[in-house]
Each structure stands twice: as C-alpha cells, then as structure tokens.
Image (cartoon, rainbow, N blue to C red; front, side, top):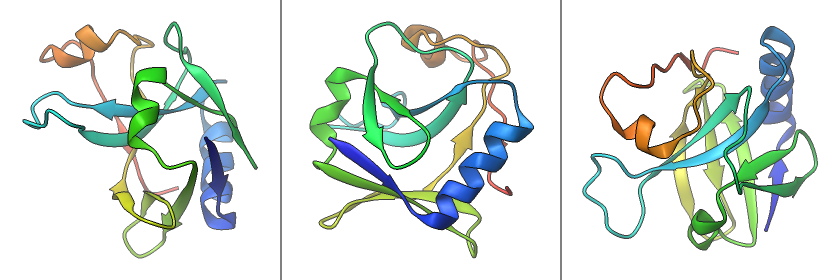
Length: 131
C-alpha cells in the first residue's frame, strides 16, 4: 500500500505540522457507533504518538501510519487530497472514495488506545479543516 498526497493536501499537511507539536499522521478507522460490521469511517489524525503495531505507509510527503488490520479496507494506491470548497481532506483511490469529507483531528491527549477512543468523553477531539 502507498499513499500519494496531492499538492494541495501536501500544503495543508505541512501547515498542520508547522502549527503543532511534532507528530505523526495516521489513518484511523473509527468503527464506534457506525453500526458497520465491515468497516467504518476513516479520518486523518495528527498525533504525538503512534499506536503499538502501526505500520508506516510509503508516501510522497509526510509519513502516514495505519493499523495492519485496517489495510484490508484500502486499495493498493490511495490518494489524500484537499477540497478548498469543503475545507476538508479527502481519501480516495482510482476506484472508490473512502471519505470525501475526511477531517484531520488532533487529539488533546496523546492517547492511542482504541478502547479509550470508544468510551464517551475519554478522548477529546479538536477538528481542524481550515488550514
């Protein structure tokens, strides 16, 4: 699997990196509350820590980390784009859209435990789309 950042998305990612503490971009598959047995909603996260076992994906820009168990949901080559009109990132491939309005979240806390994210109020998010 590899990820290609478009020029617009790459610029927005660099803005996030320069505005916040050193960290990592992660694609996080959130399955809590979606009622899906075969997937969930994927979002981009910029976090100070990586979860144990996450693997780095080759990119043309900042490194992106994914859970090995989530790789099944992605095509071989994924594209991270940015929509100026919607002010959100987009995750797509040549064959499908995984999330046409993908937010980039920056956790207030550096928790990476999925069980904690599933608990209400255990994990606070601050959504950044206006970079």
